[in-house]
Length: 223
Picture: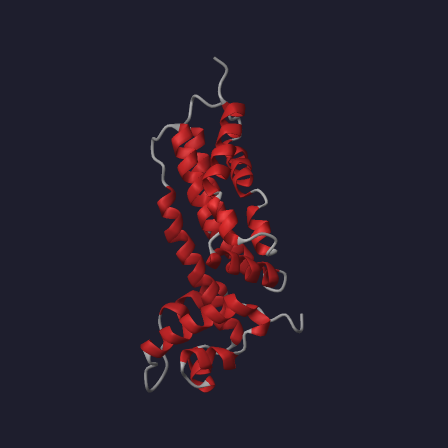
């Protein structure tokens, strides 16, 4: 459809990591990194539509022509940035492992880490951008979901499935519902600027403790 350019997310990931091979003079790796860093800030600050290639060039300290030498289009650059951010999510999620901890301690730790990640300034900015652009480029939203929320839910579901003290016929659904309780209206309040971020983040422990208590009280196997 005209006016809805496709963004090749998987291919763009390679472009974000290293300059594309070309005939003749190789691309400057340092400039490539500066462009990627500047574009990441610009897209998260202003969104895809408002962040111009002129702005990216200005922030990177290079010419607009240099930006287009490294990335053939704004869509290719944006796709590379989203791929890079998705990769960072995977790295962060690896910290969520709770091993064989007791259910209450594990869920407190898991819930706290999840809420801290969800309420981080960078996560909120990424959420706004992906929501705004996913209708135009569905692959972006799918990529972030597969590399972020889906993996977090899967990790918690695997842990819950091993807990014989809990009555959970559907561990994955239980994981989704627990994380939904933890998230509550907190992320929404920050996305809509309806409440000071410092105030919301200061209550993370209380929010998580409350969700864990409700969840476990409903999931304990009858004695």
